[in-house]
Length: 597
Ligand SMILES: NC(=O)C1=CN([C@@H]2O[C@H](COP(=O)(O)OP(=O)(O)OC[C@H]3O[C@@H](n4cnc5c(N)ncnc54)[C@H](O)[C@@H]3O)[C@@H](O)[C@H]2O)C=CC1
Ligand SMILES: O=C(O)C(=O)COP(=O)(O)O
Image (cartoon, rainbow, N blue to C red; front, side, top):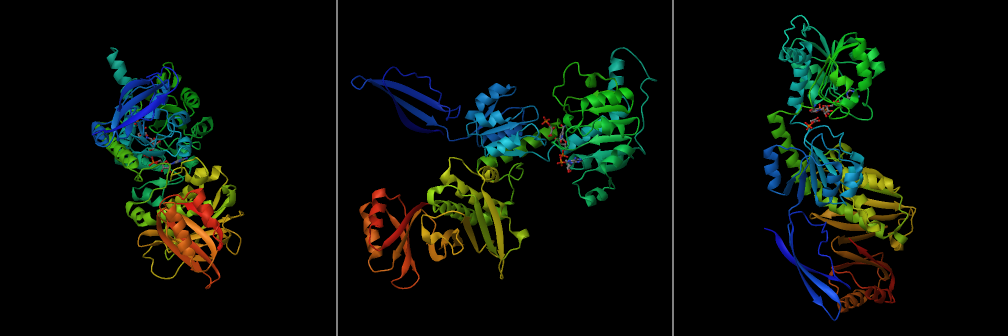
């Protein structure tokens, strides 16, 4: 049920247009507008009852399986707009919280820019994310998730289908017979049994292709610089170098992603190293092959045949020499197109997108560190502590600028392998940057934003003795080469230093500079350096009371009676400048600072 709220707009001095673009609303938002004129004030007062739909909006830009759509609809408004051109996509995107695509939509930097910050997640209903500008997504704090497992078998089966169809000229023979011919001698094929197949890219699809090819009696080798040798050994495949793979294979099947490193890795030079008469299958990405070089290799007979599901440009041009080549078999990017795979990827991507919109971290995120759910829940209070420590530390910097070097220390009884600090570092970064900029920081763009601002965050661990039951004992944030507006916050070695712990599941500030304190990090804080003397707590309390600022706690830490002390006051509301001035004027108060947590 949509929530209704009445808003009004005043427009001065003449006739207002009623056709405003309320771009912050979802397309399903209803706006009822009435207009009254206040003649004396020469103003139009427009009353608008806006039925705000609290559901997020998901734009599904390419055909998605029904089960995935149903799942999305339980949580979001789903706008299925297939066949949008780029401009239409850019126009719609500012009204969408999530976008789901397959390989046919280019999610460019412009899409992220024109989303105006609303787009929170891009879901790729499939594996390859080469059509999504990942850097732009990351810079805009937009999570990208894919569906990495549900179409593996479909792609592997398609690879095998192309391999066998190519070897026996199925497509060409089919076309010939349908054109009224009966050419038995023209379409004599080659056998697969005993031949060497080189699987290039031994990941999910590649290893399934290898397994199936072994079942066909082929000798299978593979090249993949990152694949574990034991996984290959387990299915009887030898991992070999690129050169050995391409120079010894009778058949080559491509299964690596398209990246700057793999772009056009099959080119004139690599074709020249292949066995004459080699046959090539590509169900990975067109861009891994230099297509003009492949045409040359086909023409010269170096490559006897090619079977291609993917192309540098999709669809390829109608007069593409490669597609029209008589020794080439083609399919229009059908690798993932089985009923089963499409239902699978639709559910896989819909779950990831809904999870991301709910603020959960998706296990299939492509541009953010992923942590298992149980680790996340254990780290949750430390995540809050991290952000608050970052937020507090940066507000102690005089001028709030020039923060470049931050050291974070984690004290824990857990070894590095049992304590993943990426999330904590991201939240400290969020705390450090957000108070001094207009940038929104999340797990996705934290490292990027820090780098862009020239903020160097180094991490150090103190390995404590004792039981590693708690993930962390304390976290310390130090900012070097800055001055502080609260001199006590400077450590003996000249950095701003704050330290905190989690107590009873809540973040606590336990050290400011070298001064021990113990305050719950809720609401906001006033820190006051003072000469320890009777009546101070009462004086500050009554000023805040007069200003109607609710005090949640007060604590005083001191070096020795009647010497220097730090009073920490937790407040629910922001005190006025006047209240802070009055506190500052209390004779014993030497320095005061207000910090928003
Ligand atoms: N035609 C279609 O409809 C489909 C195409 N694909 C494409 O297939 C490819 C593989 O997909 P998956 O197996 O699911 O991915 P994956 O990530 O499981 O496997 C890719 C493998 O390529 C390896 N690799 C990376 N750089 C390499 C290099 N320079 N040389 C050799 N190997 C390299 C990686 O180490 C990894 O093991 C992707 O490009 C994907 O987009 C996937 C599904 C359907
Ligand atoms: O999953 C992949 O990488 C694919 O290439 C499948 O692409 P599609 O979703 O069929 O456009």
